[in-house]
Image (cartoon, rainbow, N blue to C red):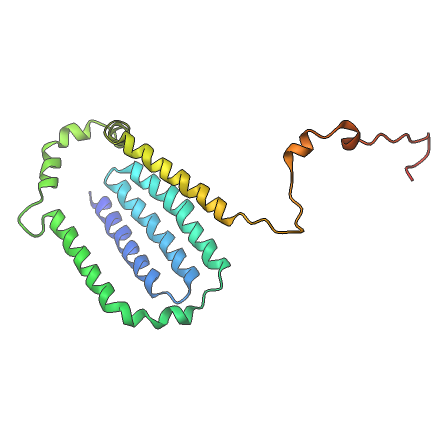
Length: 205
């Protein structure tokens, strides 16, 4: 228990520090790298409470796709950091107020205010039953039974968004040679192969 508590405080401290550096860093590339560090430590916190599926999803999806995509976009775009910092102090009070409200909601959900959380009480009552089922198996049962249609709908929405992004970025520029697979497959043999007769001890002119 002592080792687990020390690991929790270590990962929690690194997560909070990395989250703060995401906002305070002057270089956008460093901000994305600190964001990746925060994701890794958050995944370690999920592992400590036995939510291995959520931890792996956090690493695979957020670190492997979203954060790396942010990093490539930030590196490829010519971002002027000075202009980004101009409105930081202007919107700091609003951001602080939103952060305080979110923190109060989290504490209210955990039962810090109000004398107890009904969600946590329900989980404690069903602790033995929930503990007998693996985390991934429990999520799969709920996802593919109760929320099956919503899960499929989300997949369709993501597919439409992906196709829309491809269509919006597809540009036909004049003078640019493009590969035409159908013409390559169905062209006659005399256009695809050139047979050259080379004399003995001779070369191709």
